[in-house]
Length: 193
View 1 (cartoon, rainbow, N blue to C red):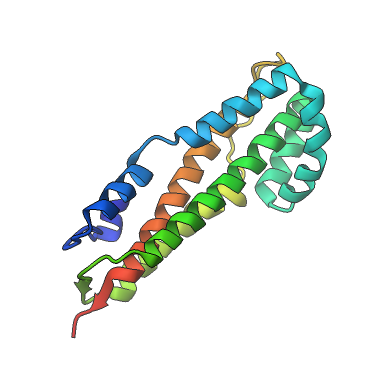
View 2 (cartoon, rainbow, N blue to C red):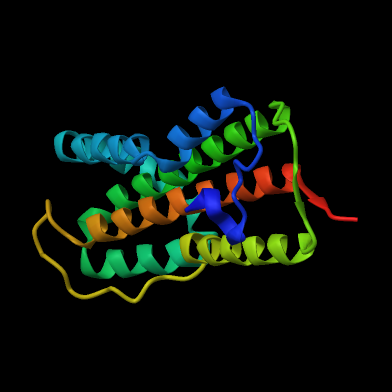
């Protein structure tokens, strides 16, 4: 999907096969890194909840600056107080990994030799449409809480944290892919004279 962002084939005329393979693996593959990180944090929470209880408060201060997490953490504190530390750590590290991946791959795009650019008459329209898509996923990940809340399971092991985290992993992957795609578009698009 990212390769066809805004109706433009990002690989059109691209000769660098090594770049294409890396980009395809980075964009199209399942988010194993985010899922693995989430499972690891969850296992730590089950085995040593006191460890997450120690590191969660400073992380919570950072993420509650974002409206979405401020709302969700308050809701969890009322409904599932034992899951607040888990969700705080999951959310913080998902945001951190997403930022690192996006910066790393955007830097890789910036220094890669990509060959011939994509010529278009509507340079501004393509970038505007792409930017709006990025803004949508950015808002859903950081600002807009999704209305999926209910009382949820009362068990310590099962609860709404997993639904929220699964949605956040999806949104993180989409945001990361969209930013990389628009970065690649910006580097390759040329206005037709």
